[in-house]
Length: 298
Ligand code: GDP
Image 1 (cartoon, rainbow, N blue to C red):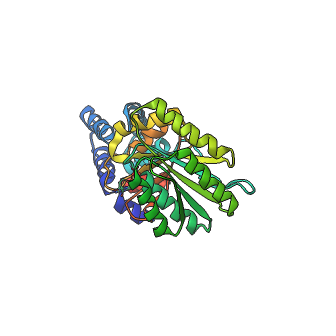
Image 2 (image 1 turned 90 degrees about the vertical axis):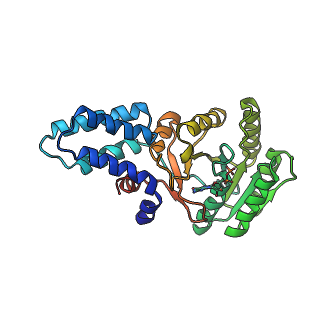
Image 3 (image 1 turned 45 degrees about the vertical axis):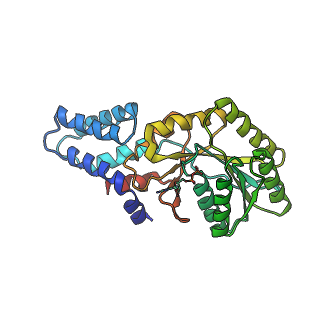
C-alpha cells in the first residue's frame, strides 16, 4: 500500500525532495531557511504551521549539532505536525436494529459521490450490508452517478424524484435500512454553496429526520486537495452548519498541495480520516500519517 501511496503522491513528493535537499546543505543560512519556508507555504501547510515547523527544525539542527540526519529529523517533525492526537476511527456501526448512518457533505465537484461509492466498496469488503441514499435531488445526474456506483460495487441505491425533498430520500433510505437489516447507510448530499442559511436548513433537516430512526455516526466533509486554501474556506462553511466528525481529502494523487492535511486539521479541529488517491473504486484509503509522510519524503 505504501508503494502505491508513493506513486500516487508523485506531486507532493517534490515537497519532500525539495525539503531534504535544502536541509542537507552544509551551510543552513537565512536564504536556505527562507527557501524551506517557501516550499512549505507552496504546499499549503499554512502560515502558522510553517513557522512552527521551521522553528522546530532550526532548534533541533542547532541543539543536535554535528551533522544530524536531516531525513530523520524532518520525518519526525512532519509526523508530529500531521498527526496531532486525533481519533481517526471511522464510526459506521449503529445500535440494535438501527444502522449506522454516514452523512457525506461538501461542495459540488470535490468528489462526494465518488467517495460515497468508494466508501461503500470498503464497507462491503468488510462484510457489511450497505445501502446508499441519493439525497442530492437537485441534479438528476448526481443520482444517476450514484446509481452507477451502486451497480459497480453491488449496493442498492435509494433515490427520490428529481427536485424532491432530500430529507425525505434520507428518511426512506434509513427506514429501508432498518427494515432490511442493513449495517450502514451512506447518504450523498447536495453541495450548492449559494446561500449558507439554505444549506444549513437543508443539511439540518436531513440530519434531524435521519436521527428520528438511527444515529448519524459520522459526518464526513469532502475537500478537494487540489483547491488548497480556497477549498478550505468553502469547506469551513459546511463545518459551520453541521457537526463534522471527519475529513475526506480527495484528489491527493497528482496534487502538490499535500500540506493541506495539516491546514485542514488545524483550522477545523477535525481529523482527516480518509484520502482519495484516484478515480477508481479502490482509490480510497484510511489516512495513515506516518505512511503519508514517508510517501512525501519518497
Ligand atoms: P461531487 O460533485 O462532489 O459529487 O463530485 P464527484 O464525485 O462527481 O467527483 C468530481 C470529479 O472528481 C469526478 O471526475 C471524479 O472522478 C473525480 N474524483 C473524485 N475523487 C477523486 C480522487 O481522489 N482523485 C482523482 N484524481 N479524481 C477524483
